Image (tube, rainbow, N blue to C red; front, top):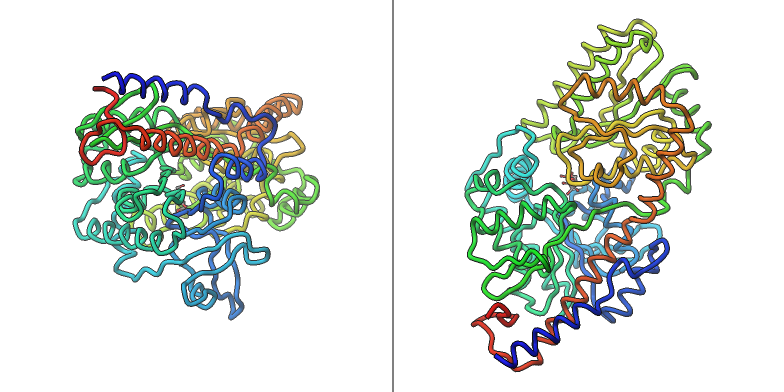
Length: 538
Ligand code: F6P
């Protein structure tokens, strides 16, 4: 007993003296991350695992082309991995990917200036259909977003999900050069991976980040494999969500379905003596964003975009940019544009909304239906309010590279992010980052995590068409001084809470947990069988 209270005191003192993200002043940069790694985790090997790869090789008209995928995960993780170095393990999804790798399926990236290794994983059609399209995107995706699409759970898909998670765990074990690597596991494609990694590499520190919302316990409870998913995730040393409310939902879910000890104050869950820290880490973008360096002044961007679209200089421009996904509220914003033109006929002929929607997961019926519905709705609205020389909505249903997206952001008067539910939504932050002229208005869904940080946006309920139309009318008449005041505050926040801080915060917590476990390991304290930590509740 005496020894345990001594250990408690020691750990308490140790926790109190820890370095946190708030102790680091100034704007976070890649060097801040490098410094944290060097000082708090010297010599540690860093590995990232995600489904989506950061660079996709494809053949376009016979020529090798590199594509940057439309993915918030990649937008955030790529600059972080460039700073940390190491290995990123991901599914090789490009039709020309395998022409570019070595015998170990590795390639140094970024292609024009390599800073880390990309290890591509081969998945056959069966694996992809079951693990990615099936369990991840027809099961977990609608389950976690609650956007009124019924989740589908098939045991075949689940078997593939388990098998592919094991396959990635094997790849992590193959790539690891050290017994104690830091493995950053990304997203809902890999709920089981943390546990599988722990079985293969017991000394690994696994930090898992869940990029999408976590629903309440009752909603999550319909998943037939809920216990397996929770146990898999709890193989992580740290589990991160974007917001505190997603963490709270996760705590409640684990509490309802697993035997565990939950401690809300240090924010931990202990199962069979293994402990996981569960915390919010609001994700962000690099600052300054790379595509901004290559942009022309705002007036030129505007002229270029209007010119390409064949629109007169006087037109006021709204934009939306996302993957073609039913969680993004694309139809809802089209209806709001129609309501604006209905309620404020003055805007007819003077306002155009441009929607970039990159086709995504198009094999799935729900996504095909959305694409068809969007095309029909645009046609209806354009017929109702347009004419031979005026189309109020322009739908560009194709992938745009980051430079093109930034140009569009800089050309716009208003950007609409109307997600029905979204973990964070980095488009909102990218729009703000693109506007170094401090102009433009952001209309932002209250159900996107970004609304917890970008308070100066016009916050709307995307299910309320009339309120969104009012938001559009307000945005289009907002005086420049007010646009500037709002934009300035939002830009300051995105700069200060950039993606290097997001990653640094997790690295500092991971470093702390490693050191804590080492203290525990050297002290002769009785532990529960199979446990990595002493039972401090005893
Ligand atoms: O942000 C959620 C997310 O699923 C990411 O994990 C992913 O990279 C992105 O959306 C794009 O989806 P996908 O990788 O299925 O194209």
